[in-house]
Image (cartoon, rainbow over all chains, first blue to last red):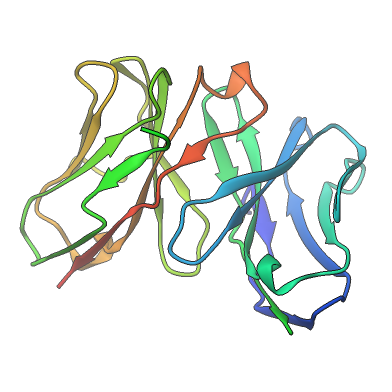
Length: 110
Length: 117
């Protein structure tokens, strides 16, 4: 079983839709959870991070962690064409490396 | 520079050849990471440097892969006897002081796209 699993999509939605992106993880000891966004032919960039369980909101983006089910989510409200990218969940493993999910390729259609 | 710089941006080579990929991290960042990203996959950890030393090289797939960071700044990833399966985007990232000192923010370069024919 992979440490972090993510549905690769692709996911295509109309502009303005609410988008839900999800990952599951295997190790209940994980405490920090990140979402990275990667535009085509670019490096990933940190979008949001959360610690432990609960929600964190930043503008149109909400990150949610459910530690009881080992499930993390990213919600995008009022999605825009500029949100079209690959979204990667990531979890620090120890102090030295991030373990990434497979990434979900998202397209927002105008 | 303003961000992490990687060269070359694209490299096409033949099976069996030797390849070097260079990473110039953000000035002042002591931690440097190499990741490999195959098509349709997330980045896969290769090696982590703290200063000049390789603190964790557990992700290097075999002894054909080697990386150095002799002066604690620029790093070079070296691949010997390249194979077609080595084709991927090699991403370099840096951070001020490693993951423990912040909350997981790594600053990535745009990657070096390696194609082995």
